[in-house]
Image (spheres, rainbow, N blue to C red):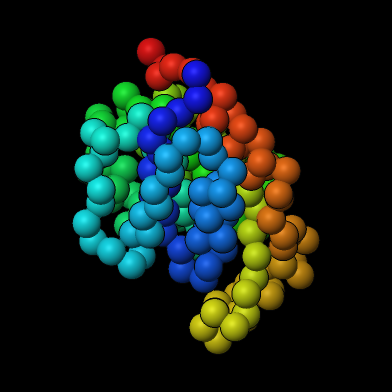
Length: 168
Protein backbone atom coordinates (compact mmCIF):
# COMPACT_ATOMS: atom_id res chain seq x y z
CA UNK A 1 0.00 0.00 0.00
CA UNK A 2 1.66 3.27 -1.04
CA UNK A 3 1.71 6.17 1.36
CA UNK A 4 -0.96 8.81 1.19
CA UNK A 5 0.59 11.80 2.96
CA UNK A 6 4.26 12.42 3.66
CA UNK A 7 5.93 15.36 5.37
CA UNK A 8 9.62 16.00 4.79
CA UNK A 9 11.05 18.09 7.64
CA UNK A 10 14.62 19.32 7.34
CA UNK A 11 17.13 22.02 8.14
CA UNK A 12 19.75 23.12 5.63
CA UNK A 13 22.68 25.41 6.34
CA UNK A 14 24.37 25.41 2.93
CA UNK A 15 21.75 23.92 0.60
CA UNK A 16 22.80 20.26 0.47
CA UNK A 17 20.03 18.96 2.72
CA UNK A 18 17.56 21.14 0.83
CA UNK A 19 18.71 19.53 -2.42
CA UNK A 20 18.24 16.03 -0.97
CA UNK A 21 14.84 16.87 0.52
CA UNK A 22 13.62 18.20 -2.82
CA UNK A 23 14.85 15.07 -4.60
CA UNK A 24 12.96 12.92 -2.07
CA UNK A 25 9.92 15.16 -2.63
CA UNK A 26 10.15 14.34 -6.33
CA UNK A 27 10.62 10.59 -5.80
CA UNK A 28 8.18 9.75 -2.98
CA UNK A 29 4.78 8.36 -3.94
CA UNK A 30 1.57 10.10 -2.85
CA UNK A 31 1.02 13.62 -1.55
CA UNK A 32 4.22 15.14 -0.15
CA UNK A 33 4.72 18.38 1.77
CA UNK A 34 8.06 19.90 2.65
CA UNK A 35 9.05 21.99 5.69
CA UNK A 36 12.44 23.70 5.97
CA UNK A 37 12.93 24.44 9.67
CA UNK A 38 15.76 26.82 8.76
CA UNK A 39 13.16 29.13 7.20
CA UNK A 40 10.07 28.70 9.38
CA UNK A 41 9.17 28.31 13.00
CA UNK A 42 5.80 26.59 12.70
CA UNK A 43 5.64 22.91 11.85
CA UNK A 44 2.61 21.49 10.04
CA UNK A 45 0.21 19.37 12.11
CA UNK A 46 1.85 15.93 12.19
CA UNK A 47 -1.50 14.17 12.72
CA UNK A 48 -2.30 14.89 9.05
CA UNK A 49 0.60 12.75 7.81
CA UNK A 50 1.01 9.00 7.51
CA UNK A 51 4.77 9.32 7.06
CA UNK A 52 7.44 11.76 8.15
CA UNK A 53 10.99 12.07 6.85
CA UNK A 54 13.47 14.06 8.95
CA UNK A 55 16.83 15.21 7.64
CA UNK A 56 19.70 17.47 8.53
CA UNK A 57 23.41 17.96 8.11
CA UNK A 58 26.29 17.32 10.47
CA UNK A 59 28.56 20.19 11.47
CA UNK A 60 31.24 19.73 14.12
CA UNK A 61 29.76 16.32 14.92
CA UNK A 62 26.19 17.53 15.56
CA UNK A 63 22.98 17.86 13.62
CA UNK A 64 21.31 21.29 13.47
CA UNK A 65 19.67 22.46 16.67
CA UNK A 66 16.34 22.92 14.83
CA UNK A 67 16.28 19.20 14.01
CA UNK A 68 17.24 18.16 17.55
CA UNK A 69 14.48 20.34 19.03
CA UNK A 70 11.94 19.09 16.49
CA UNK A 71 12.72 15.44 17.26
CA UNK A 72 12.57 15.98 21.03
CA UNK A 73 9.32 17.98 20.90
CA UNK A 74 7.59 15.46 18.64
CA UNK A 75 9.25 12.25 19.82
CA UNK A 76 6.06 10.35 20.64
CA UNK A 77 4.22 11.54 17.52
CA UNK A 78 7.13 10.61 15.26
CA UNK A 79 7.52 7.18 16.86
CA UNK A 80 4.10 6.07 15.55
CA UNK A 81 4.60 7.30 11.98
CA UNK A 82 6.20 5.63 9.00
CA UNK A 83 9.51 7.31 9.65
CA UNK A 84 12.61 7.94 7.58
CA UNK A 85 15.75 9.65 8.89
CA UNK A 86 18.70 10.98 6.91
CA UNK A 87 21.79 13.08 7.31
CA UNK A 88 24.31 14.70 5.05
CA UNK A 89 27.94 14.53 6.08
CA UNK A 90 31.32 14.12 4.43
CA UNK A 91 32.28 11.04 6.45
CA UNK A 92 31.86 7.51 5.12
CA UNK A 93 31.55 3.99 6.48
CA UNK A 94 31.47 3.48 10.24
CA UNK A 95 32.19 7.14 10.91
CA UNK A 96 29.11 8.17 8.93
CA UNK A 97 27.03 5.48 10.68
CA UNK A 98 28.16 6.89 14.06
CA UNK A 99 27.17 10.42 12.96
CA UNK A 100 23.74 9.08 11.94
CA UNK A 101 23.27 7.32 15.28
CA UNK A 102 24.28 10.43 17.22
CA UNK A 103 21.99 12.70 15.18
CA UNK A 104 18.64 11.21 16.21
CA UNK A 105 17.15 9.85 19.44
CA UNK A 106 17.39 6.09 19.80
CA UNK A 107 13.60 5.74 20.02
CA UNK A 108 13.30 7.21 16.52
CA UNK A 109 16.24 5.29 15.03
CA UNK A 110 14.78 2.00 16.23
CA UNK A 111 11.36 2.83 14.74
CA UNK A 112 12.58 4.19 11.41
CA UNK A 113 11.76 2.27 8.25
CA UNK A 114 14.93 3.61 6.68
CA UNK A 115 17.84 5.72 7.88
CA UNK A 116 20.85 6.67 5.83
CA UNK A 117 23.64 9.12 5.14
CA UNK A 118 23.48 10.58 1.63
CA UNK A 119 27.02 11.96 1.59
CA UNK A 120 27.81 15.64 1.41
CA UNK A 121 28.94 18.62 -0.57
CA UNK A 122 31.30 21.48 0.18
CA UNK A 123 29.71 24.53 -1.41
CA UNK A 124 32.39 27.14 -0.76
CA UNK A 125 30.15 29.96 -1.96
CA UNK A 126 27.78 29.34 0.96
CA UNK A 127 30.46 28.79 3.62
CA UNK A 128 32.06 31.29 5.92
CA UNK A 129 35.81 31.75 5.63
CA UNK A 130 36.31 29.67 8.78
CA UNK A 131 34.08 26.86 7.45
CA UNK A 132 36.06 26.81 4.19
CA UNK A 133 39.37 26.53 6.03
CA UNK A 134 38.20 23.77 8.37
CA UNK A 135 36.39 21.83 5.65
CA UNK A 136 39.35 22.00 3.26
CA UNK A 137 41.70 20.76 5.99
CA UNK A 138 39.32 17.93 6.91
CA UNK A 139 38.92 16.83 3.30
CA UNK A 140 42.67 16.76 2.73
CA UNK A 141 43.50 15.13 6.08
CA UNK A 142 40.72 12.55 6.30
CA UNK A 143 40.23 11.76 2.62
CA UNK A 144 36.53 12.53 2.88
CA UNK A 145 33.99 11.89 0.17
CA UNK A 146 32.56 15.11 -1.21
CA UNK A 147 29.59 14.00 -3.25
CA UNK A 148 25.96 13.01 -2.84
CA UNK A 149 24.84 9.44 -3.45
CA UNK A 150 21.90 9.56 -5.83
CA UNK A 151 21.57 5.79 -5.41
CA UNK A 152 21.08 6.13 -1.64
CA UNK A 153 18.48 8.87 -2.11
CA UNK A 154 16.60 6.73 -4.66
CA UNK A 155 16.78 3.65 -2.39
CA UNK A 156 15.51 5.72 0.57
CA UNK A 157 12.55 7.02 -1.45
CA UNK A 158 11.73 3.54 -2.74
CA UNK A 159 11.78 2.01 0.76
CA UNK A 160 9.60 4.79 2.13
CA UNK A 161 7.16 4.48 -0.77
CA UNK A 162 6.94 0.71 -0.42
CA UNK A 163 6.39 0.72 3.35
CA UNK A 164 2.96 -0.71 3.95
CA UNK A 165 2.62 -0.36 7.68
CA UNK A 166 3.77 1.54 10.70
CA UNK A 167 6.45 -0.25 12.74
CA UNK A 168 5.09 -1.85 15.93
